[in-house]
Image (tube, rainbow, N blue to C red):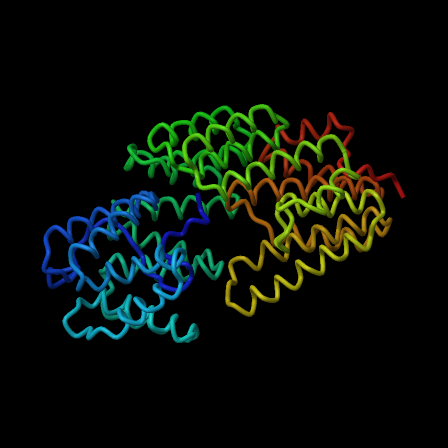
Length: 455
């Protein structure tokens, strides 16, 4: 599971979390006069390290209740409060930021100062704040972790890797670093190294769900589906409310055409009390995959008129499927409208500084444009767009890996249609080196996804 990144409190109150493993010079790490509140806070940190967000919120709320002057507990409680009562949350946030920080630890002052920059919309000051504190307190794993997260959030994986490696060296039990190093290696196509990091994570934290979930994502990318399902089921066995494992099983089964299995895991997720939004996303995936597999393009367009699955501009699978349906039916106006909405969303993301999401959004737009141009018969322009999408996509997680492989197979189909057989088979060889199962299925389909004919 990757999009979790447990540091972000609704993108406004940001404080990293983790088990108290390495003491900061000077001894005291968190400022509270209540041993009971401290115990609850440390339990929250432990839950955050495991990515058990519901448990963490419960412990944070209890810590703030036990000690109303526990500043960091109050800051962290703003997130859950924000979703329930925005005005109340903002009032608490302002109260926390008005606190005299002279009696707090350097780490606490860091989180307060950075949160204040978010509140005052001074995003440009945040890198400086992080750098200054890391320079002063280079052995505080919380601060080193924030430096790594900063690079991760910008999509600067080389720098993020360096900082996560430093974190592992200084604090080997800071287990989330192994998770991130695994994903970084996945993104670069270094699958053996990724597997080693995920298995190290699992070895160190065998009682946590996330190591099994992350390893399962790698297995999806590699077409090792039985191992993936076994790993996800272990995650659920350890923590039945671990929603990402349910979502990843649904993703795997739906893309492999097992819609009965997809329905079964969705029903299990709902029975386990997984948040409604995640269950709905899985429902959307199943519904649109069934129509996609049947080539029921007219039904897809009809469904788009009322479906909540495609209300937003975000080019998720239902949206991309709707775009494909429009292209297959020659409804170029609808297709271009979807592309334009995605481009507007991309601009908003760029303006807000969400740089890590830019690559995926750009890739989705380029992919959709490439599909449209291919079905319009402009193979040269389509190839340019599909290659650009491929350059933006990585294998960083299961969803991204599936998208990259899918885009590459469409590109191979296009190259074959354009008479570039050698390049097409060279590309398929690369795909086979990652996921041989998908290439075998593609070959069984006659090397066609879009149904392109030789030009």
